[in-house]
Image (cartoon, rainbow, N blue to C red; front, side, top):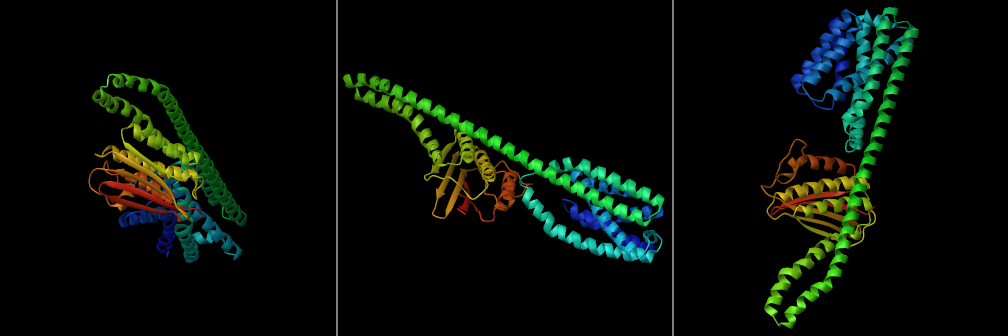
Length: 434
């Protein structure tokens, strides 16, 4: 009966740990983890609650060895332990209410088995709800905005302090004996530590989101400033061009007076016409951005396309109708288009044609945003491009598109399409007005 109780108790630790781990294990690794828990619990049962420290350390070291995600792993083990302790204390309160002494669960193995089965049932329900509803919801909501490690760096100190408080209290409670007041105090203490940890996590997430949004706003403001400076430079160059126009005309009068029309033709096509095109082409292409009335987007897009132009790429911009609002968060759309444009520039630079096309087309009920670029090499299945582990110097980098997919997952009303044909790659977003 002792071994069977340890067998059940091992699952009480096992299920919360695998629920909170941010990665999956192989079957062999799951079995190894279970047996580590099993033998550690035998040590706890034959010694004291202080051996829980050994269990947490051994399990954390093992899981850290099989992955490089050390901080998420340690935090997952600690959170799993808190969930276990919370359920265990709840069962203890129930046993106390039924006039069963808590200490008897350590000596009466039949009662221990019943207690384990009750705890395991509650735990399985909680783990199911967490893994299928709460954790996916939190991942979807915050993953595109925050890095997990950044959150855990802020939460870990609170988590570790709460763990030490709970462990020291349990070790002291074992020495004093589990009287009813101690059972109630332990439950109250665990509740307080859990609430403290949750508050710390909420505050950390809120702070990091505010910091990230501020960084994005500052970045977009800088790109808008670059756009403004570029437009001012172009206006200055255009005024200079107008000022020089009379002199250019005068430079052609000598050919007219001498009736040297052959030389005039050569001079016009070799000198005058390229001089004019230097301003009119770039001015027209960037001038269409004036129809984009959303400053954050205009700044980011112009900065990317000006950079592409300066790198020697042919850049085509088409925004024929004024656009003042869009049914997406401006920062999210700016990040999304930033990824598409960065990848487009990178791919076009490696291609023979070296071209980029950017267009925003307005329809009665939708807006279509298209980013196209030339690329070299073979076509790549798009399913691979969304894989964060995939990276290539060919068409596009997969990590950027993987991050873009995380942003798009927050907007189910936005239709995202891709196409690869004749060495032209296209990303297209179809966004309804509301």
